[in-house]
Length: 134
Image (cartoon, rainbow, N blue to C red; front, side):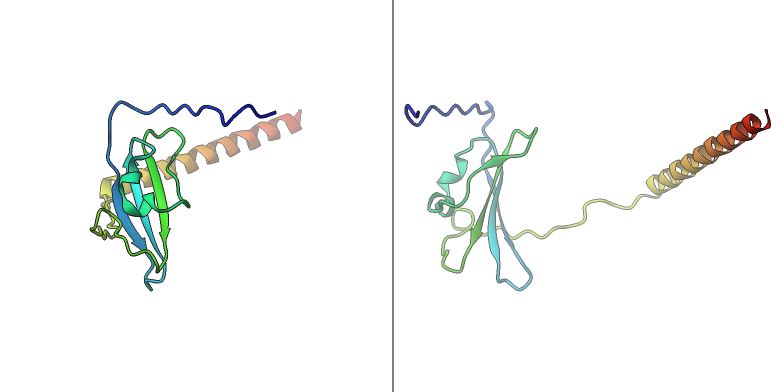
């Protein structure tokens, strides 16, 4: 039995963050998508014409995250812009710098792990040898 559509309760944080829009595409330019990310209200993308006119996407939150994200796949018929009339093309840049200290410490940790494993194996073998003699 169904007594109606029910009630939907949405609890949103007090802080209000506006979405950041990014246009994503492949190298050939055949596939495009508009990514809206980092917004606090689940309906914040309705201010954007692309997301307002599309029924195929909805905002989601990752487990444990307080901010929403939404992706809209763009076809060739989409004439709107990704963010209120402007595209924000950003390329991924490697932000992690190589550090000699981190590499040295990582190598040292691996060496200590191998030494520990070797010690455990040696102790187990010596214990088994002692037990077999008695």
